[in-house]
Length: 328
Image 1 (cartoon, helix red, strand yellow):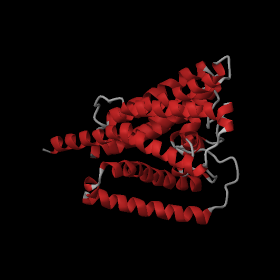
Image 2 (image 1 turned 180 degrees about the vertical axis):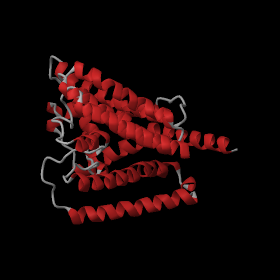
Image 3 (image 1 turned 45 degrees about the vertical axis):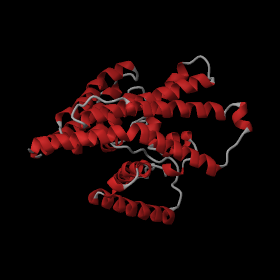
Image 4 (image 1 turned 60 degrees about the vertical axis):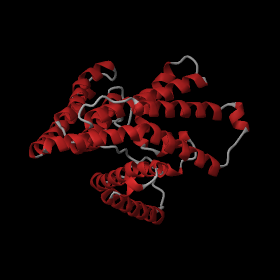
């Protein structure tokens, strides 16, 4: 563990040096493929870094912040796209906006402090209850159908609270308002609303700029087919990246493909929803918000319980078994 902590610190030091290089050198080169060639070695470094660790505690933050966020942002930066363009005025800002899932808020934030304060308190209390269930083993006595509803909370709430804490610290350090890391995804009334606006907007913006928009731009027609292909491809890329996370965190266990299928299924359904809503049929028929919310949440819980979480649980069991063998 001590060696991995030292290695973890060295990885972040080397990441800061590499991002600093991207701040000073590539901008002097013409945007496009020439600049991308100078940035690719840094991207390769971020992809290799998780392989230096055996514990998911170190692998996951490197995968999320460097292999995922930093790599995609730098590749977009090579083409003068994304949240790094125009380039931040200072090196420190450039490092923060590259390595962390944050983006400067362009509009004035709405004053909803009291509302968000109560929502935050409810989320913290829910995390406490879930932690008690985990420690005392209560979840093993629950019916599988109820677990399908609890597993998304296990993943979403600690993840959101951790990123919000990071965002609050960076807001103070950088002295500027930042966009929310999540926008209450449990209130989504459609798949497009869930994936496009509420669930991790930073990642959605990157995929939209890096995959969806270029594919639509290359299409000669701006028909529903181009939207369908662009959205489905963006979800496929997201699924493959999550499979890579599983591969690293499970000790290089071969992924089953369930996570990719989850994202592809959601991508196809989201793309279909977008096309239908903009068709004459979709404009003629409207669904009440309460009904659309129930349908959206049911779809997310069922598909994640069927395809996503079984592979995550399998990865957790592999890690526990490996840890047991190592200790024995």
